Image (tube, rainbow, N blue to C red; front, top):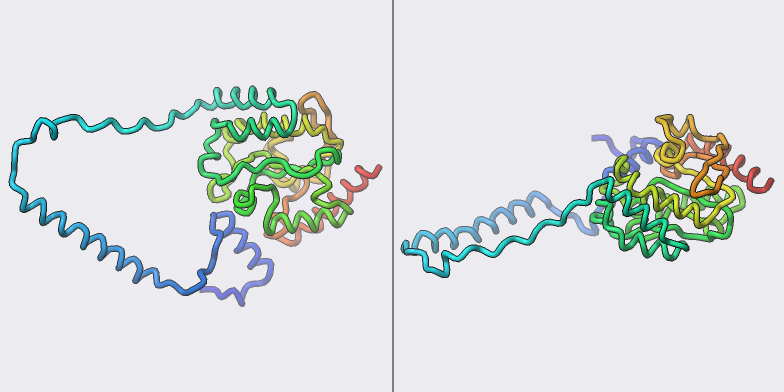
Length: 284
């Protein structure tokens, strides 16, 4: 077993990021817990609970079922019917296009049941910040802290983003923050192509309603979602592109996600180059 003291800061950050991506959110209990003893106690309790039931069943005389006992058991409740992907996409598009403001769009998304991710997520994570700023920053999806707090870029990743923005003279309250997918996937896994397609009308409508003058995309999934293709974020970053969404064209730049910087601090220099280019463009 490797001790944490034997790891470099970069290796330790990468290990913690791996655990976070796997869905591990709490590493320590307040008091030590003997899980082996706890498991044995649970087995013993289950065995003791089954013993009286077996004794009663063995002692009960056989009898002919009464008319009441022969009555059919009540039918189990029907499972929720899954909405086909094509239908879910059409419903999402209709709900998004019907919204005339960000507030209306949020209500529409809260009532949307066509994406399976909402069944495991705690909260809808909607856009937050100043839509009148002309600057919109989009990430891939909510993480554990975002899902818990119901806001984009919460927790440690949010702190990292706050520092990234402060480096170019921006406060997170002065820009509009959002995600491609508004519900956290279980275990922070990458959203599937189908989930992304279902959520596409919502993020595109957010952009169309906010009408940003500049758009910053964070991370590999986000850049691929908007630009297409299978290139990595290192191939897509740092190059301005014109993105046409909802009848508007927005100058768009992709850079690394705060998670990329925390996992591999060497990425900070690449993100810093991109942020300086973003600053020069918005001030130009």
